[in-house]
Image 1 (cartoon, helix red, strand yellow):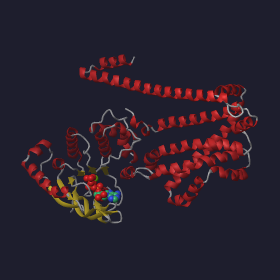
Image 2: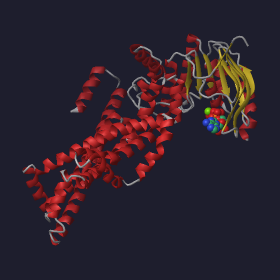
Image 3: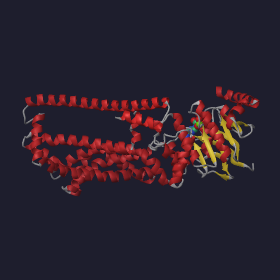
Length: 291
Length: 255
Ligand SMILES: Nc1ncnc2c1ncn2[C@@H]1O[C@H](COP(=O)(O)OP(=O)(O)OP(=O)(O)O)[C@@H](O)[C@H]1O
Ligand SMILES: [Mg+2]
């Protein structure tokens, strides 16, 4: 174990007994911190599991007492899920929707971040566009779906446009805010060391704005899922929206809940994935509280 | 003055549409290779004056000249140690110290080597891969100092660079700075709240007063160089100067 590794290091270095004591203490602190983190992780997991059990248990209990046309219960959903996964039905429709989601979200990220940066950098663009951005962000995106259908038809282009519409503005606005919120004093440090425009952006502005941009992406994921289902329902009915609509219309409430639960899991997965990536590329933004 | 490296020519700086007067009508020169220390009560405009010298803000009236040329933007060969440290939170100690060299276009190998040298000089060897949030305030301040030193500037502008370090480390750093000044002959402007520090380091001490900020007096500090801090403190003139500056600062410090 690691204790013996420390002992080896001590032996190899031929250090004083005070140093040895320190190294042992460091080793112990490291192990303690690791244990503490593991215990915290186990604690979190335990709370989540218990809470999940209570929620599922309650749902199961009350679900079984209601009319199966109106409501369902977890074991029934699980059974339906197994069938739908085994037959490939779930994946077939989910993948249709996912393509739309990723295309829309991807385009919105690229253009949203680019426009946010451009607005923050160039006053002319900012002044020229900020009213429209605010207005479009304020209009409930649903209201614009019929317009998009008019322009783009009912197929995948229209669906992607819907997701784009739902996700574009939070990304633009957060990116813009992130750049505008850069600490003036750090910009001054950059100027003092005679940074050119390029270096200022690379070394100061973009890293400072990064947490804001990620927060914008997180918002966009949530809104993107809404847009995705909405697009399935309001344009040509396909994908996961079709699955929900079909089972709803045949009163198969248990099967209808399978895509719904899938959407929830999808949201959690994408958000945690984003958080993981953020921790990797921006460790300074999250670890400040760590011992 | 012919040998003035930095010349502040009747400069004033007003903020917020003239409602806040940072300093007014300052006449001050810094000679080549001298260490000029500035002491003065909080809010008398020391930091603002330093930003004017560094070309970060322009004086509202008057001029700041370096080598006879008006300072309009940050100049090459001038480095600033910020009162607020100004470290980049997303860079490690090594990358922060290398920052000035990197954006200055120094070759990569040389950058790393110089950064390492100055990290050791300020006593932070072993912390190269730490992020600023993992360091104490005093350690962060020393990173800011190393970053400025690493660019090997002709002029060093330092804003209370040792304010957050402990008394012992402070003395070590003072000696390092004196040694550096002996070896590399730099012109330094050094803001401090410590009269002792001003006397140990400075060739001259400018005493400022507040409301409005102005230079009250510039005192020559004629201890021989190379300097030894304890010898300076033992000198009779040290106590005399110290008391004098104390009494100069006292009336404004109370208001
Ligand atoms: N950007 C600014 N906008 C408005 N007022 C400012 C600005 N910077 C400084 N001031 C004002 O100018 C005056 C001098 O500030 P400065 O920071 O230069 O003081 P200082 O002598 O460095 O003080 P300290 O010893 O506390 O660091 C203060 O009254 C301050 O409020
Ligand atoms: Mg100050």
